[in-house]
Image 1 (cartoon, rainbow, N blue to C red):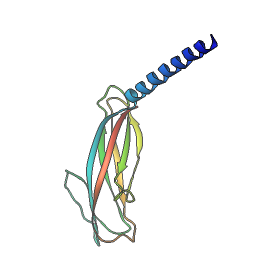
Image 2: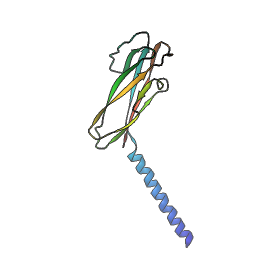
Image 3: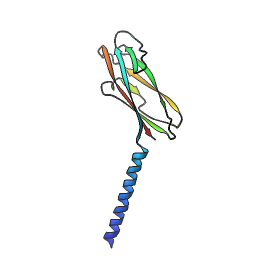
Length: 136
């Protein structure tokens, strides 16, 4: 008798865990991912790059910085959580608010700042910036 009761409890707990796991995949799934190319040059002068197909910082002197803004829109009927990831080859240069929430119907400008340490060698650098939107 006690064994049957324990089996029922285990079955109920297993069903509850399965429902909880399935709903978490629905509630916290990625709704959208955007990958941006990032490009910048390290050199002796400041320079501007007006290329709109990439997140271009232009030329930045060693020890300098530059900021660009990405506009993130929430067209979903629910809040979204925004997560940002820079590829490993540019991660040490990039600074941004890596995790925040946007309400339905709202937009937010996300400043992405590039910091170039003084000891950085001159040259061209590029990488990827991945922006993922999750149901909050």
